[in-house]
Length: 346
Image 1 (cartoon, rainbow, N blue to C red):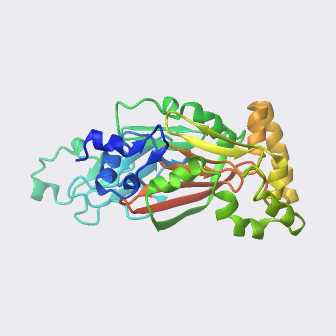
Image 2 (cartoon, rainbow, N blue to C red):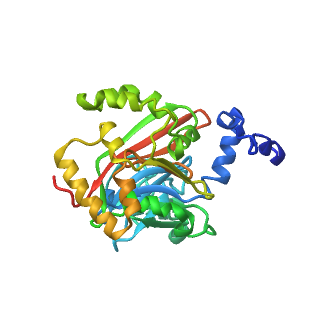
């Protein structure tokens, strides 16, 4: 086990330096699973993915497989996707609708509330001595939602989701608090990548420095020809950044960076489609009236990228949300969705 003193030595807060060991250590990865992913509120799914009783979505909390299920009473439950008999997954599908989840090893079956519903050969193999009420799927201790985003936490003593989100609710509202709500469309996209999950999360938490360099080929493709030269000149402004770029960092670990300039919105090639722009005009007006003028500025700016600690990220203008699931110190799996305003026209 890494000593506390050794962990502290990996970060030099006074000089802004961190050790690359934080991104490659097997020991630190297991500490993160124990101290972060077992204690933090983690994103599970969006309510639009499981609208009907029996709908489910399979995901992860840290390294643990999870089933998120819409209950018969409309509530949402989350359980370890592991049979209480021998630990096999009780559901191998990514998403769908089910009346029960049955382990394909020995056939133990659970209802959508996680209760043990059937055990094959209960009388012959177990002499009816199993207390069915004691062997249901292990529930995630806390499940709650904000703006339709569903979160779970393993720690029964954890603070409320509202307190965990803290000031980051301001930026969650800017992106997800729509009058008619949002919904996920097109299913989930998954990709395994070499690298530590913190590298991706940190980028979204506030790294705008990379954009003019890393994304210059992308900007060259999406920028309208009449704006291409302007965009190229803005890639290297005198001060190195767009004039209106801002950052927010929370003591809770959340972070975001955004640009509030309509001019940069256009020059980045994000605007230009008249149907989309008309919709954004309406939404922006409504956001300013219901939330605040400043949130309207952020909504209509170039791009806001953000990360809710530890591993939920989003981009506002392309409406993309991503989760960085750790699969070891050097491997992560990205889950990504597109979200849209629910009341937008087809």
